[in-house]
Image (cartoon, rainbow, N blue to C red; front, top):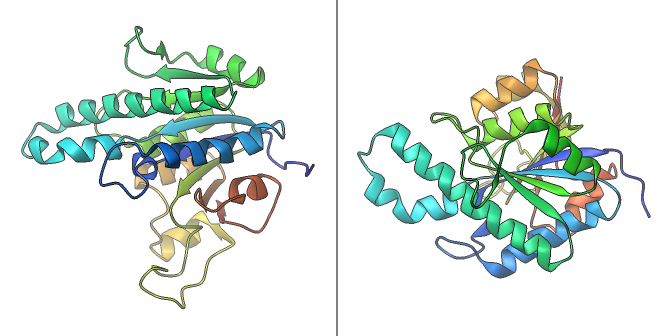
Length: 238
């Protein structure tokens, strides 16, 4: 079995990643595929924490939220991430992977409150920790939550799992000649105006010297290859 180069990772999953080809909601085949990709690295002994977004659920109510107070809408989005976290936890249960959901909002009937020490212990025990409700504060994205939790968990790297298999010189969907970056510095990403993550999250990673990676979660074996040092995705570092 290949030897991982990362012992502990923080995986950022967008809510949209759970939709598959559906217009909103959770596609069961898609979430099973994602869980199996994560399980492949857990089987190598890699400790995995996950921050999940809520766009797949909030998208369905977004028209009704037009004109709504921003803080209220953000709290609705946080609750959507908790729903996704519970769905992800159940999918891990089906494949035999122990996991725990911790929420930044206090909803103890369905999820534990976020407690750093407990989360660290769960990771050391080999359990997946799924963080819901973002940072627990409005006006902050789940990208920022991923950067924050990655640092709090002492992760070796924050991995943003997307539909695209890395950061490109231009949009690879519109430009077939676009070239994938294998590595980048934070300054290069800023200079070239590459939208790697939300600006607050990106700045937090840069200032704390937390490596950041972007890779395609729907490419079979990509996550396992990446954690073993394979030439997939894009790494952004100082």
